[in-house]
Structure formats: C-alpha cells, structure tokens
Image (cartoon, rainbow, N blue to C red; front, side, top):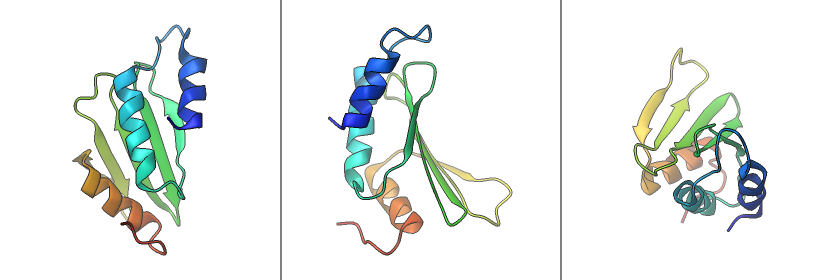
Length: 108
C-alpha cells in the first residue's frame, strides 16, 4: 500500500470522525497506481473516506472515495468552466482525466 495512505490511515485511526475504512484505502491505492508519477493531495473526507485532488494549469480533478466504496466519483473542471463535471469513478475515465491533466506522459 502507498506510504502516504498508510500514514493518513494511522493519523485518522483515532480521529473523532472515525478511521478511514479498508475499502476506501484499497480504492485510493488503486487510483494512485494509475499514474504514480503524478501525485494528488490526499485528505480524509471526515466520514471514513478519502478525497484526492490534482491541480495543474488551472485544471482541477478530484476523486472522492466513500467509506463503503460505493458512489465514488470524479469531479473535473477546466479554467473556463463556471462549474465542473461529475462522473462515476471508473478506471478508464480516471486514467483519461489524468492524461488530460498531465498529457506529456501517456497512460498505458
């Protein structure tokens, strides 16, 4: 498992919000493996889940992972958009958006 996720899990283990669930950690670790060269900021969502955010060239992408692993989503916003788009979290979509965020390295 990713070291940053392990540290986050340990920090949140005794939080009053409750610990990060194993399901959320597993999904987050999987998402991080899609583009290990392009790291997001990672934070607990306050309910046992995880939020990840990538920002580059005024583009924003967030992945929100729920504590139960259900209804996880990707949020993207381009600089000229007033509001972003929300899509269900899927590996292919996530990889496509990461390539959109940082196109100089193509995904495999």
